[in-house]
Length: 116
Image (cartoon, rainbow, N blue to C red; front, top):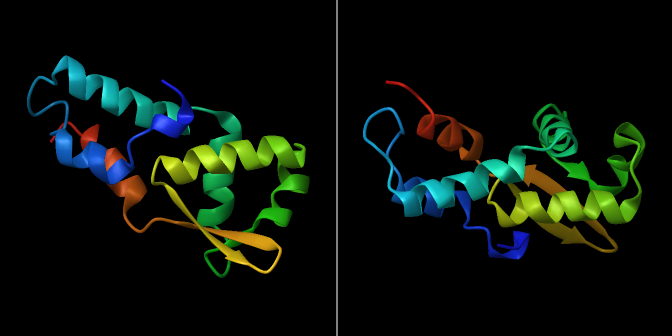
């Protein structure tokens, strides 16, 4: 399945109970795995960290290039995957795009993996 076919994180939450609470179906395991793949990349984890730790809770696309040491096309690819997965939101302002964490997205993903 291509990154453009990722379910938004909110859809994954709706389909799946925490994996330690009940056995997960094959279909729901596929959905959860696709969402986890969206964050299972060191550059994407760093992007999430940069956004989460930003003073104003948002980061301009131009501010990712230097800290990540990646080119613009690669950064844009990673950002697109995180937006499609429902982890980040994108707001276009003039020629720049600004990224924020979707409120509760990381908490929701963590809740699926909890043992409680």
